[in-house]
Image (cartoon, rainbow, N blue to C red; front, side, top):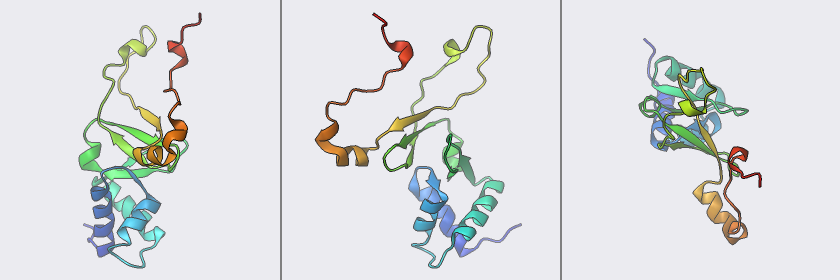
Length: 146
């Protein structure tokens, strides 16, 4: 059994209180508020331990460094939203549902992952009226060729 240290406790508390997936750097910043002189190597070492203990889940987004969220959150089906301005990742608790209709005929969908990309509320507010006329994204498959 691995011992619990002040550093590990601060790291786990940072993840649980964030209510969104955090990068190792974000965890370092938050956990450093409780434990001064905390280093990134200590964060990674403790993250590895917390993942092995199944207290923390790794969130992997294409082309991004891993992020970490509480297993209490990870154990409930959800998706993610990544802000293209600040790069923060947020949980999305809504799901489009059964995606079997999108799979080619004869294929079986066993699971799915969905990541939305755009601006978070903070970055959208900071952008202000300069984006007021921006149209929402539409998939090419939904465009009328006429």
